[in-house]
Amino acid sequence: MPHRLLTAITLFTTTALAGAHQITFIAAVPSNTPADKPIYIVGDHPNLGGWRPDAVFMTRRPDGRFEVAIDLPPGDYEYKFTRGGWPSVEKSESNGDVQNRKLKVIGDATVEVTIANWAGLEPERKSTVTGELRFHRDMKSKHLANARTIAVLLPPDYDKNKDARYPVFYMHDGQNLFDAATSAFGVEWQADEAADRLIREKKIEPIIIVGIYNTPARTDEYTPDRDTERDAGGQGDEYAKFIIEELKPMIDETYRTKPDRDNTAIGGSSLGGLISLHIAMEHPDVFSKCAAVSPTLMWEDSAILKRIREKKAAPLKRIRLWFDMGSKEGKQIDFYSSAMKYTDRLEAMLKKAKRKPDVDYKYMKVDDGEHNEASWAKRFDQILLFLFPANMREAANADDA
Image (cartoon, rainbow, N blue to C red; front, top):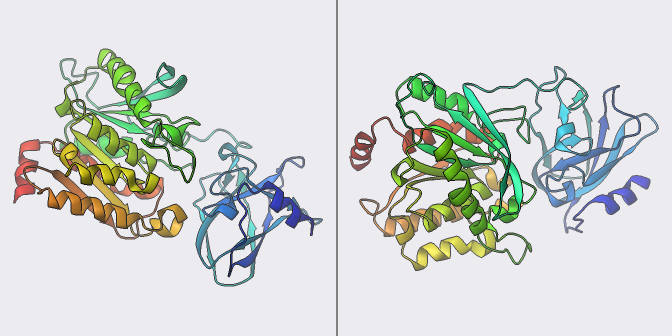
């Protein structure tokens, strides 16, 4: 059939898999779908495009619906539909965000779905920002030879309390932190809501959160080592120089920060968790706190764990470290099939180095935790409570108890 040929051409990774089943997807589209534009399916398996939004082309049927047949091995999968990019991802009937569709493969099957709306064909999504968010757009880096947006979330009393200075939490994938309108998947971390609530409740100290937008070079910038199997990565040290030598000085000059290491943290998820851990280890003179959320510790044959083991966790002995992993993450992403095994290894190394006073950490295994912004949002308040408690000394005593 014609759609079989098109699928073979347009998938960036096509693999003949033993024991795979043929799944035929048929999608009905809304009436305002442009007649001259293609439709794509995207999901968490290489044959679903590996979340690349323009990899798997669907063929228009005579009845106006779109169809594609894909071979998938038994298992659980997530997927969505786009018109070629995340800005044109499918939307709900009320133009709201659509959570990833679920699919369990146990045999050959036909899956028929109805797409209600498309992003990009309706008014821009309303901002969901809470509090004061300031932007520094097109910030250039001599170390990375590119530019990006920086979003700065200020604490509630920033403009009223002119004499106050604040700790700073530097976070990666900044476009996903504060606003569903800018998030790559239409779901945000709700970092602004969590910080605002905890500050007003006096459960954490007032902080500034700096959201560092990613770039098309995200994989290279967020990894300290070149992964030989994937032929990608390895610009993590240059990215660290951008943060330490270019971004942090700008933030400290522009805002009323506490620039010392005791009041400077770094964090992120997935590859952002990996690079956060690496930067904190390599620059403990700059950062005293780190959040490695769902970290990709398996990158380049778990090179970062080998360095920690060789140095007997010495690089982490000056860092207050949060790390975690969700129980469902390995089922979502093939690359993460043994994700929790690696975070368990990290905890074992830290235990061997003695928890107190040498290593200060918290490891959370998240029941039913998934590899997405919605799941990270559910535990972000706990991350803030650990890294920035209202009284750090009381928190340290509680940890010892």
